[in-house]
Image 1 (cartoon, rainbow, N blue to C red):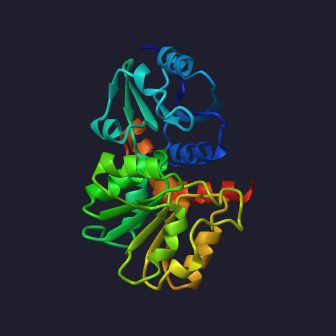
Image 2 (image 1 turned 180 degrees about the horizontal axis):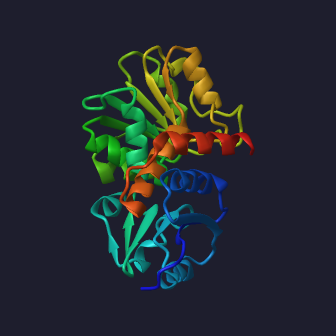
Image 3 (image 1 turned 60 degrees about the vertical axis):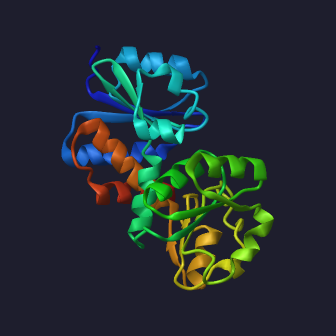
Length: 274
């Protein structure tokens, strides 16, 4: 297998982001590792995999629209990524490309900073790739999961895939405004991304003591998080999920413990310049 100098990791997506670049390169510098990280805007998934293979890339972060499309072109799929049905990380071991999913660990680690998830009632809003990873992680953590989604058929299909229940459409979120309705609420949609006044969750259902995660990370404090904090909830920013999933990627690529605080500082500084 070709070996690059420095060792190259990177990401592929329709719209390359500077955030992974900032986090990973800051971590490499902090540990003195001979790695570099580059973000690529890619249309053809198969050709991107061939390039990574033959140029000797050590790892790839995979973003939309490639998370599912990349799977047939890899040599192996980690059991967890196979169960979720999406890959967000590829590791190259001597020419053998294996797909992983660290989105679920990012979300679960971010939530577990606030709450023990075992036995908790969790509501997940959405049915896309992020929702699939989060529902997988919550079910694995022994939470009781209810899914709410704009399209009932997609929400029901996701619930069936992971042994969750379908709670209803977005119009029915208002029914969650009782203390017994949920313990943890996750917005796994893109509502609020670059839209600081947008939210999918009616403020009246945000009750004191509940844990609320918004996967949206730009802006770092979304309307949902502001509403949650104002109503006495434990608000969990999408940046926490993003850093935790990047931390897992870093450790897969390098075999070393990630400098979490360094990555967090780099991420927030870079978002602040956007």
